[in-house]
Image 1 (cartoon, helix red, strand yellow):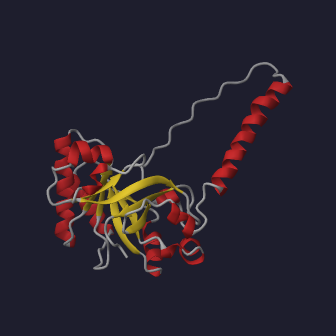
Image 2 (spheres, one colour):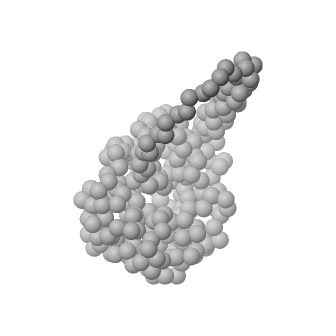
Image 3 (cartoon, helix red, strand yellow):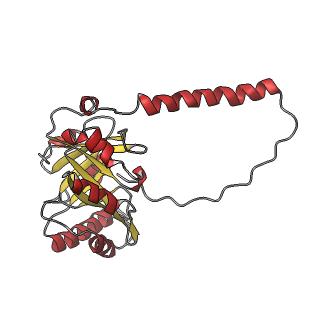
Length: 257
């Protein structure tokens, strides 16, 4: 899912170069790396791009019932018309989760636009909140609920838990408060998205009644057989037409379409 917002660091002053450099060395150290970078950029834009829904289907792990994406402002303004309509990815993308909020004051700039296009094309979608475990959970739930208005056809809300808390006990307690507040307001129990490591060491068997969405990129998690684990984010480097940069790819044990 979306990474935490980054604050810009002030650039350090550059040192002035001294003396004249040999022209041949200058050419070698500048032109050759530039050529290598250009080659890899070209490969990334062509070979790295999934061009068709058939090609996309080839990289999906077998044995799952649904395929989905999760998106945020990190993907910029997605060309949903190109992806869904022109390229025909509506035949394989069953669901999409969109980032809505982060912490108690941040609103994702692409939330409304992404939601509008997904509704336009009839793609099943849901909303997620990026959780700050070192902040109070209720203001975060209130912020999420002030923006997101659930519909009967929506997927369950998701809380994105990627950061360490003051302790594992404190983390679980705060996540539970957020989930209970959202459940009370929407009537739907949220799903907890987290890494394989967090699920294994902090949550497994300790959040009774809650379902999970696990991120693991090197292999299929052995915990996918756990009853409470529903979705698997198998890649964070997906490349799709109409999407700037990389996008997370997911599969689900549920039929979501």
